[in-house]
Length: 134
Image (cartoon, rainbow, N blue to C red; front, side, top):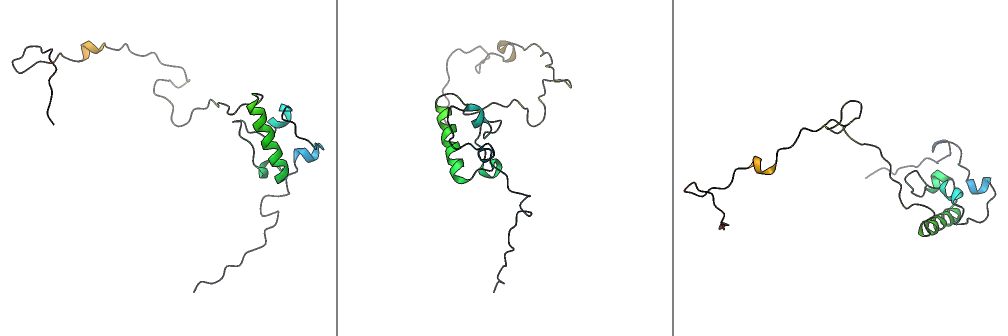
């Protein structure tokens, strides 16, 4: 039989310090307007995602109002749905040198020089399509 687990009380110090204060409370904003883009951008990440409650410090009602306002502003093309971030992940590309500059490519051979023409059994060039039974 398993022993019953006891849970320790969770306090603020264990979760990372004092509670984050919402921007809406600190600036005494009672109505979130979807046209106030500067306010709404404060609740979005650099990739244009809506920040979570625990990050922004909103309560659940404020978070619903912020999310609805951001979605309305996106629909009206005041805010982006996504933002492109131009960072390179993984190992660097082979066609770049150490400074990040592109290396010049070697000239490519044409496709006709790469492959020899098909020849049939007698050794003459064949233009006919041959069907192969599987």
